[in-house]
Length: 635
Image 1 (cartoon, rainbow, N blue to C red):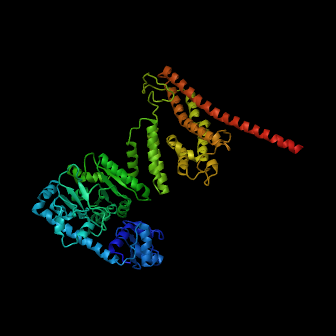
Image 2 (image 1 turned 90 degrees about the vertical axis):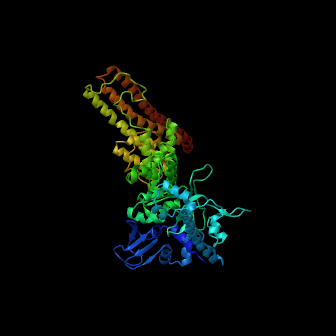
Image 3 (image 1 turned 90 degrees about the horizontal axis):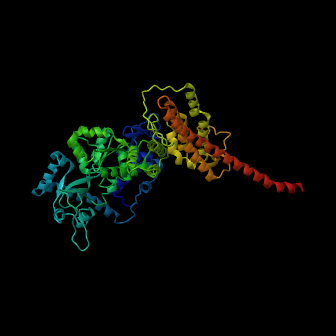
């Protein structure tokens, strides 16, 4: 079996060495590398290092050195081909089958590098020729210096269908087609893919040309502005990042990598001195490209245009990254001012302006929240419910359980604050549920003289046993019915603001919603995290044998009442405080609010009496059912 160097390079490129080694060796981060006590010899001080960027491990003590295949052979005792097969299966690659023509194909693929190198040399020569005058003028208008043009290998593809075929006539036509330089159409002569375009070479990590990108000089309807090579044996656009070989070196110094939208953005950043930038190949960032980025930096920075297209590109990258998130690895986002790309911003504000933006990127979580919050108007309860559903949908995509839980809690917390903003009862007419608005002006500067006995009574009302009993009943009810926890999460998060103990209990329920089991038969104890359930309660959601639908309805109503009652109590306190300055309006508002409070108390009483009556009826039925049995036994 012949394995070409190109195939082995691709295999190694798809494997993250530190992830492979961490399955059996505990690694610690050490700058851009990982370190551990060497698994090949006994030592107390770590001298074994793993470098994902270069794809090898090395021990400075025993001099063991190798890559992913060597690791599988040395640590797992596998023969070479078995190690290759194991890694290929993990990387999603097929090992070439035994074939007498395999060596010939491997040689042909190696020759493709010669084809691409020759094509690059020809494109560069065409740019320098009289035929490249318009292309040189275009690059001058873009502000690219001679140094930048030479460094990035700019070239020119003449608007001639057969020119490159003639220029590279020493190579077989089939090779030019396989390299993506010619397009083959049935019953037609193969013709040049790139015509009338400024050309840029796309290189791999070893700086070999594997593909090309071309840009037209003037935008025209129906003509693609940018054109990349198709996928070939050398080039897989979903696994390649433009400028990777240059950015990798710069990234080791900055401990950062920037992802721009296109290769012209990368070149503009490099011309301004920002060397650690790469770009995908004109498509959304892929999972494989994200893994490549994480080899260079734990939190790559996405730098996209500030228009709608840039926002969509950032969100597509976020959606690809969410399932892959792991501790310490994420993405950050910088969005440029609307209508500007990196080149425009640098020309307007200089390199310092770009640096300021890059120094303050937003987190991936911030991007998800802001995008979904601003995605559509939130004018109705249905709109807000849709926002909540979208946020939860994003968290469900996260595979890592701890990160998924933390994202869910943070996003629901933000949603709760947004959907249920704290009411400022210092402002007149702010309370809505009582339905009362007074039109009398309220003088904030007027001296307020609330009688001491009124203040004492209000304090008892707002912090009394009733609220504590209802709160503990609701929390324990949610523990008995864990399927209802996230349904009421936003209300509870809003309620727990400013109450550390209540917040702790709510966080416990949110974190363990999937582990709790109905009816209180949970594998984890709730006694240390929740207040004890009331002993004398008759709420259906705390009783054994309750009808599940009735229990859920009563629990939902109890949550709603629990949330509403503090607002009512605060509004009553405010109305009482205004007696001296507005006795008539304050009295009328207080009466309305107290009426609503009595309705809440009455409803809670009805819930308890309904359960008591239901329980009494069940007892009677049981006694009636036992009577015939007793008579038979007596006989």
